[in-house]
Amino acid sequence: MYVSIIGGDVGSCSDEDCAKAEELGEKLAENHHILVCGGRGGVMRAACKGAKKANGTTIGILPSADREEANDYVDIPIVTDLGMLRNSLVVLNGDVVVAIDGSYGTLSEICMAKKFGKKIFGLDTWDVDAVVPFEDMDELVDELEKVPL
Amino acid sequence: MYVSIIGGDVGSCSDEDCAKAEELGEKLAENHHILVCGGRGGVMRAACKGAKKANGTTIGILPSADREEANDYVDIPIVTDLGMLRNSLVVLNGDVVVAIDGSYGTLSEICMAKKFGKKIFGLDTWDVDAVVPFEDMDELVDELEKVPL
Amino acid sequence: MYVSIIGGDVGSCSDEDCAKAEELGEKLAENHHILVCGGRGGVMRAACKGAKKANGTTIGILPSADREEANDYVDIPIVTDLGMLRNSLVVLNGDVVVAIDGSYGTLSEICMAKKFGKKIFGLDTWDVDAVVPFEDMDELVDELEKVPL
Amino acid sequence: MYVSIIGGDVGSCSDEDCAKAEELGEKLAENHHILVCGGRGGVMRAACKGAKKANGTTIGILPSADREEANDYVDIPIVTDLGMLRNSLVVLNGDVVVAIDGSYGTLSEICMAKKFGKKIFGLDTWDVDAVVPFEDMDELVDELEKVPL
Image (cartoon, rainbow over all chains, first blue to last red; front, side, top):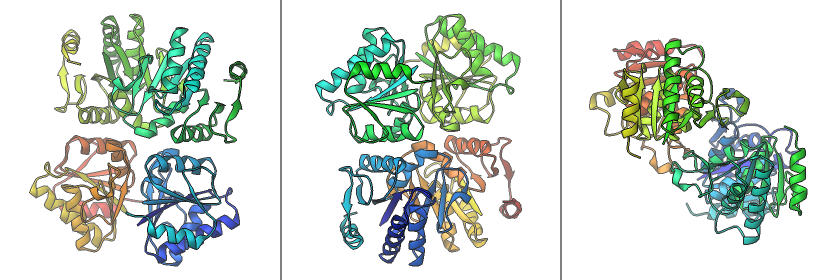
């Protein structure tokens, strides 16, 4: 399964939310899922870092045309030169989307994911009815496994 | 000034909100502003209809490649074949954005407008801090006139 | 009818080709067609200038997010922030496409127009079989009138 | 190095050109390059097949939103829902672009690659000056190795 993790970029993400993203990345990799994200900092970097601890595969879909923009834990950087419109590709490439924290960029991704008909799980993120909120990481990971492909 | 009006499509927009959109479209045209919208039904159609009552100019930026998708009150239909990504163009072409009602498509537009640094006014729409909410139409129109270009 | 005129930007377009673009813009406006172009200099500016001599309507679909990028003869500037990808919108919005002169940007537009199934006429432009070449302006304009909508 | 291979889709690609694409894919993988392509049939499928014979990594950037559109030899399918505009991403993700055979879709990619400032090599493809043509595969592969990153 491809899982898109979306959320706050570097500077806007708390240590606590980054820790959650790292834990989630690791658990997804342990369950052999492929991680898709926006390839940059904050939640994206933490999730990739976690995934690499468990030898997972990480895809980073970048806003710019410069592969060097990817964080150090991205295996497959995809450059787009689409700016914010690359957000659409980030969620489109997930079979499920998980939002952690995040500001308006993340909210735009939630909206797009909803429009694409994706299941969206949330941890400490926007309170909108498109997102199924979780408090507990293990519960979220359990529910993820039940999403039909 | 170019003003983007965003909001619920046909079927999701209440009669009351459509009436507000029509009134706003008319007032904007009276003030010689150009109306930009997504070119389809609901709030978009009502706003265009209002603008044409006052001889305004209406631009409809359509998701499909088919100009016939535009409502009857669009003067300048722009086809994009970009689907939901055309939302970005709708808000980018406004100097100010006004949201009326609306679901996740509208919320994605609010997010994009925020990212583009646009001023966003709201009538009976999403309660997020990127949007300045108004209850009174005249007050909204007055504030619009004060937005610096 | 909407007619897209594509071709060399300022600096890459000869005086002779710009004169042709201006003449074509004027003739299209006389025949009540709406001119669509990329909104910038060279062939685009000349065509818009010609159209305005005959009181035509000109639409300029710009690569940037800045309306000021439009040449002085564009009535309806559409900003996109899509860079080169806006080329797709330029040809998509024409019922017919006319290429005058032009380099690789123009050739990409010819390819896209071909993919969209558009009729493409050419004056002193790329020699590829997607383009119907003309030497004589009046003949081109006559043929344009025969394109079924 | 990331190498984008572009060219005719299934049905438009000759057996001879497909054989060249397969040979090139294999040689690139032997040289530890990552293959980027449009993920579909014809030249794209043949190049991926060749790369997998030498255990290379293959990325397929697809026009649709459906991962199943990818050919059997794509390791990392990226869905875009961008239609023809995904062509831009295919060439943007290559440090070098190689065109084999191909029609107007391929020519649009050549134009975009040129605009992005990419080096473009060709085998039996469009005769335009943006493309450095090769007759001999070994010579092309040798030149590829000399492209500075």
